[in-house]
Image (cartoon, rainbow, N blue to C red; front, top):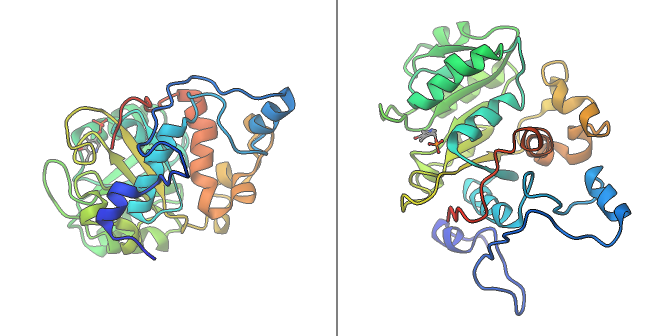
Length: 282
Ligand SMILES: *Cc1c(COP(=O)(O)O)cnc(C)c1O
């Protein structure tokens, strides 16, 4: 039986078994115990799933991520320490120095600075297009090294509404995913995957939190974008990761899990921008 959105808000992501806590427990632990070093080795090699260090993953965070994943209709999700971290990870997971991104010009000022100033210093270039541009103008913004299109469902603060379907079609025609910052709409009002978006980000600091109590972010993958059709564009997902024992994310985790697993295993490992299990986003 499929749950309605209100039920998902309350029950999503957590199904306690007999005698387990009714509320999501706050697992306030940096580390997790295993009986043998072989058990730990399997975790480090991504051959078994489990928690070992809260800089990469924490059960409380994953429960909240699973709720947002269910609300958005995605296949995998992760929490980040802020919306800024979510925006950064969402792009940096698939773009490197020398790459290019097409971005709506109606976006949050903090995201604009991150993209146009800080990520530019990392060698990633952004071309900003008006959400009201013509199809020809949108098409002309793409380059051979374009790796994604980024926009906001309802832009903060301009409140411009993006035609997600049109931007998704343009992105897909150029073999790249559409990433949508769904902060202002929340999945209650709009689920961008239903309009063709491939990845959704959130600042959970705003309406998702709702109480003005915790800064946080989230990234959700629809599992729909087929990275393996463009292995030259997305080598990080389609070729072995030497920093993680030669794992090829699309082979090991499929389209449903590759993008989020890579972002967790590489970016969360290296940047540590994880949300505290005490932030209590929801
Ligand atoms: C606030 C906001 C962000 C940044 O999120 P933080 O949690 O403040 O880091 C990103 N996008 C939108 C649309 C926002 O409103």
